Every structure is written in structure tokens, then in C-alpha cells.
Image: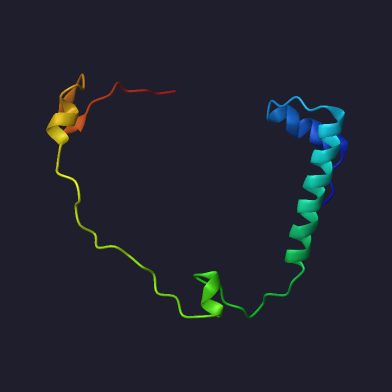
Length: 99
């Protein structure tokens, strides 16, 4: 998939960017280079391979370092809700918004 200068102009417009001609040309080259890399990756046959949970798992066993799931801060709900305009049963009340 190769982008054209018109594609770059449309993308810049959608992103609300104002690009100079030099910047547009550089962006075109960079994005087309990126898409070339993606096409090379898609061309690799990965059938029969299972996904890895971690990229280093191919080289060595990976043990995730997880911390204990314990509360480290005291419960300050009452103090935090004192400045709220409306609270009910420990929950902040907000106006209903329907668009």
C-alpha cells in the first residue's frame, strides 16, 4: 500500500496539521517506509506458530514479578467527598447527560 501526496494532504487536513511541501514530502517517505516494513512482516509465514505471552520467552523462561495485592493507602472516601456538591451512599452524584 503506497500513499500518494493527496493522501498525505487529506491526513494532514483530518489531523488539523498545516504541512509545508517539504514536510509533506518527508511525511510521505516516512509513512511509505513504515507501510513497506508492515508488508514485509505480513509476508512472513507464521502458520503453526503459537503467540508468545512475552517476547523473551523464546530465549529464557519468564517469571513475572508481581507485587502482593494489598491496600497501601488508608480509606479517605469521606474526606475526598466533603467538597463534592452531591453524594449519596458513598457515590458522587452527577447531572444526567443524554446526547
